Image 1 (spheres, rainbow, N blue to C red):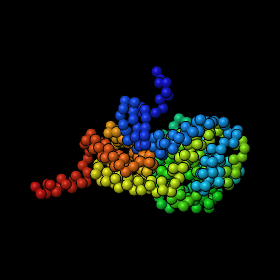
Image 2: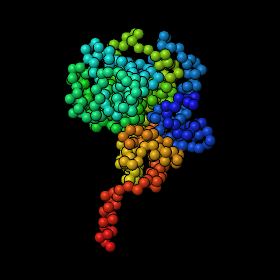
Image 3: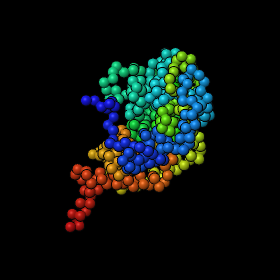
Length: 411
């Protein structure tokens, strides 16, 4: 018999009752250090006092009125985002998936007007679970059983600039890309690649659409990841951290990109509601501060040092680490799986998140402190040791062969 909750997730056997900062407590009293942050959603950790105060204050006023009326909180949040970014205008959604759908819709409207039908996207991407979003991402895991898919997407290897240049043409309306792939395994674009993509879009008159649902809102130590490269998109997707745990998303756009979106072309029942936007304003009050972003970059440097040491200490488990700021991934050796490391970490009270490319993601709250980061790395050490202890015997490594040879020669 099917469960009351549709079984579309393989859920861990944990039920959390409360949280504070980077810690979660289960209903049976166990504490876990949370380095998943709701998959990069709880940017300010659990029960942050600024967010709690914002929700309580707004909840005593008005929660929802619909977009048939002006919403002051929505207007203020849009102004904050416009002031802090390339954008001239913002549409608020409830999620990253909805933001992706709107971005696709805007691009297609441009395409119809310009006689262009093709959008370029990239292998390993994740833009959400709706039919348009999975068509944009491609990949059998997301699209199997959902055909016929929305047409018009050309998929290229992520970061392959030669392939992108070869695929561009006058029929391309948009290039749709994550500056750092999250679900794909914490894969950043190479330095300079984003500027090169911007130049190609300019040459061919195509829109540059950046999906910063996971890498945005301070996650890399910049409000949005593209800002580190000095590159501006035409359209940007934001969600996850923008609401700090409250369902909220946004599409940011230039005036030119948003030109087709006149009255009646798009809508949302809940998007931009007063309660969500009040929380978003509180998030911006904290995350957009230069000192806060400086601290995230410093924390990223601390984690980089600790992860390098972890990889060096467990070369049979880890190939390496990668990422920016507090969007980090551990690449596992063949024979070890993300599911196994996630389970081993959970056994020692640490929550981490699996990803593609045999990677485990570390996405702590941006408010995490040095002691908590050190504790997380110590627990990762314990988890790696547990994997080593239970690993099946494998072929000798080159180092093992050399040591054996030296021992034999000395004998």
